[in-house]
Amino acid sequence: MIEGKKIMWMLKKDLLSLWRHKPRLISLLLFPIIMITLFGYGMGGSIENVPIVVVEQSQGNITDLTLMAIKDMSIFEVKNITNNVSIAKDMVNTGQAKAAIILPPNYEDVSNNQSKMVVLYLDSSDQMAAQVLIPATQALFSNLASVFDAEKLASLQVQNTSQSMGSASISEDVVSPIDVANENEGLDEGSSDLSSSSSLEGIFSSTTAIANSINLQINRIYGNIEYIDFLVPAVLAMTVMMSCMMGMGQSIAGERETGELARLFMTPTSVATVVGGKIISKLIIEIGRAMILLLAAFLLFGITIRGNVFLAIGILVLGALCFVGFGMMISATASTQEDYTQMVMPLTMPMMFVSGVFYPIETMPWIFQKIAYLFPLTYLNNAMRGVMLKGFGIGDIWVEIVVLSAFLIVFFAAGVVRFDRDV
Picture 1 (spheres, one colour):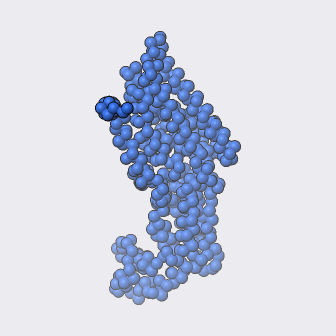
Picture 2 (tube, rainbow, N blue to C red):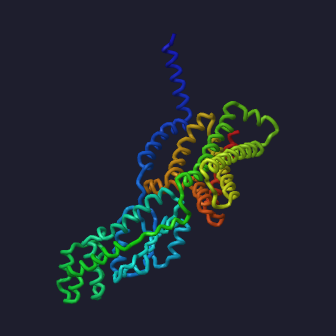
Picture 3 (cartoon, rainbow, N blue to C red):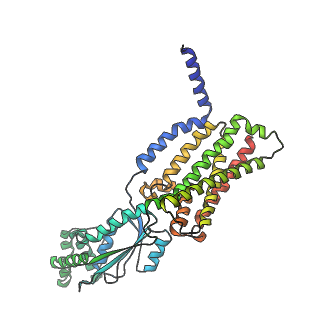
């Protein structure tokens, strides 16, 4: 027989227990809000503002109009315009840009039917961004003539005419053909000819001729990367993160709750010995788990590591230490394992989605892109993909190594201080 009054007592007891454990209560309230925000705004968005560099090896109307068309596309964020191919390629190789659009030296030449080879120099390690950049660039040059509408042609003619007359510079805003006529009323006959309809038609015809003779060559600098290649390095990092974080809850908060930790410290054992032993044991377990996952990726999907295998393992060890420290820092403030779980979930789940494990960071709103670099998992992902997909060495990922080491020091310092006081 169910006793209603006792049920109410039990309900009151559980609610009071939750109220007394403020970290658990706050986490329960925050976690659903964080997750719905991430799924609502951060996941599945279109890729926009992908950083690129443009190489212009010729000067003229057609080149200027091409640059206008590139800047007008929301998918591109032009980081630099240069005439040096080596500079552009170096920006892509070092990760400052995802791709370089290289216009050929004969881009302005309409005197013959010689084809013009435009090169898309692409960082193919970011497979999802590459999937969007390639068709967008192909569409741009396939429809070049239609992109350059009459208003942009008229605007460019006004600017060129003003420069040739030595007049003050005109705003770069787009103007209509009527405005062009008004601007040119006071100019001499030769200048007026430049802005006449026949001149505009000539430039438009030249643009059409160039559009019809463009060939787009795609250079994937890291080969043809599949989604599984993009995914595996980050899944390795995520597995290490989740295992270390969840494992430390059982190892410290769980043993504190059952009294095992207190009994351990009744023996002549120092805090450093206990903490060190737990760190080493957890590290061995998680590295073994990561190696099994890596071996499975080799056997099932043919994944290869372009860089040094031992460097990849070393990065995983550094990441595991970092997240063990993170878990120790949080578990030191949790009196029970349930408290720890509720406290860690609002950190691990957003970190998993925002840090670019499944989707490139460029798919997210700009605020999430900034938040991503506050999480250690972002740097671990970047380092693992750099070694496995790009063949990077220590000199190429030293920033990620330094940042992970800094997180490691901060987490362990905070965790040990709190652990000493609590135990």
